[in-house]
Amino acid sequence: MSTDVVKKKKDEHNRKRDVIVNFRMSPEERKELDIRVNLSGRVKQEYMIQSTLCQKIVVIGNKAFYEKIKERLEEIEPQLHKISAENIDQNITTELRIIVEMMDGWKK
Figure 1: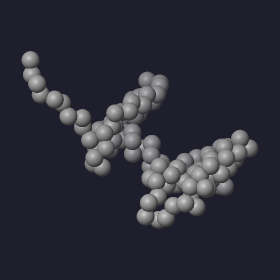
Figure 2: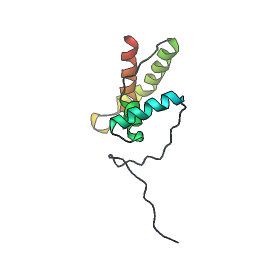
Figure 3: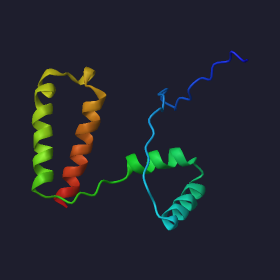
Figure 4: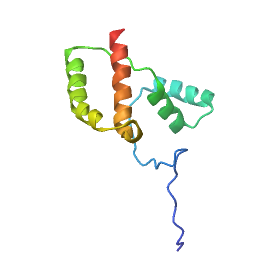
């Protein structure tokens, strides 16, 4: 029996990627995705991450969307008053960036 321990692969930012995300596609969509991945020169995982996180967010705004964003901003506001530029929680900055992108998409 081997006592070698397999190290978890980390990305370029030294993060472990141990969360699995699944979704369903039609066979036609799968073929198109495979073509796009192949043409991109990336592995499918990198292609999917970049495609998902770096695309413009298109929002279909309605009252429920507005209320959800408003509630979340009200939850975040007290934290914003307590922090300085040097110690902003990365999760909060990411969420705020996403909210701004969504609101910008909703205005258009």
